[in-house]
Length: 104
Length: 344
Image 1 (cartoon, rainbow over the protein chains, first blue to last red):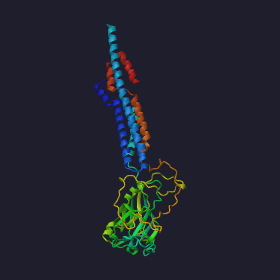
Image 2 (image 1 turned 30 degrees about the vertical axis):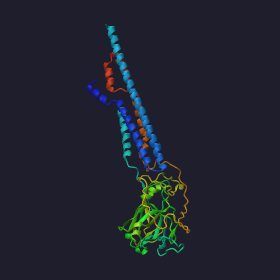
Image 3 (image 1 turned 45 degrees about the vertical axis):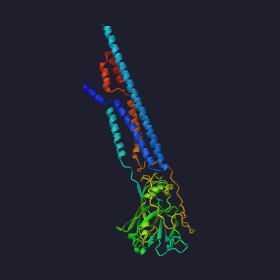
Image 4 (image 1 turned 120 degrees about the horizontal axis):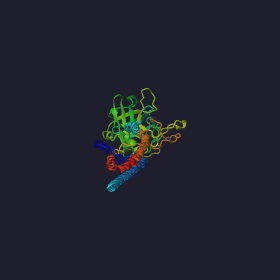
């Protein structure tokens, strides 16, 4: 594995890209909330406000909630992957130590 | 396979972006005339503190039929006009955006005099009006809480134009549309002005007649069905979106305004025309007037986003270089296990 390959791999980290997508999703949900607020505030008619509230506000809250849950899952997966990575290192070191002990 | 998927995503994203940045379909416009018109010639005594002392006098019939009049003599109102726009050709549930009233001035032979100095004000008729032609009785009530001035232009033809945006906003806020009143502005009364303007109604005869018209832009909320029962009916209720709220003009006090009632039937509402059967609710998915085409791509976006998130949730949460380091530092026996796990 060359250094250039490592650099290219780090720039295409799929986990980082997925986190960015989650953040963009949360931002779009907040934007939808703002849009709904603006649409509902510019009219005094309940019949014109309801579509903004129903589609915009509820949809915005749902998207923000989904994005937060998705980011939490991804963060937990990252932590657990690092734990597994540490465990793999310990396991590799133990295997190497055992091999050395047997050969000697 | 990855390249093919990327190409597919790009191919789907391009039309989505094009639809996203495209302007919504422009509003429809309607050039319409008058559904009803009336004009009153209140007696000069109506301007006095005692009010209109005499009712029941014969109407002022010195002008041609099919004309309406607004006038003032030495600061005393002499004629006042009531109009109602014909919106019967608008689909039910339409949303009015703007409305411009155009009032071509009739010739001097039809009664106009000193029209270029006329100062007209459009107000609303809260209680409606009855058909009348030069009635001497007390005119129906007038509410100038929402008003708009008229602008005069002598070229290409002498005419007044009135922007009815304030009325549109008021109708959108729930005010009833019972008619528009054209009357001399307060400035004309204070200046003791004298002028008289005549307008043709839709019923006017003759080649030179240019009736009062209105240009209305609106959004048809529901596409009418194509069956015979789906003839467009009157647009009711009227709604307007945008405009920044209702603009309230100055409250003017005119003789006979707000609350004056007589026994002549003035002030009664027009008889409501029978409404045709309304079309069944139908979503105009195949109509090219679908206002926000990007909505059609929402399911596609949801599918693409769901697929990507599903893929991201099943990939390794470690970056590729970390996995490479782990693979590189592992002993030979364990390296094979890691490679198999990574391939899986």
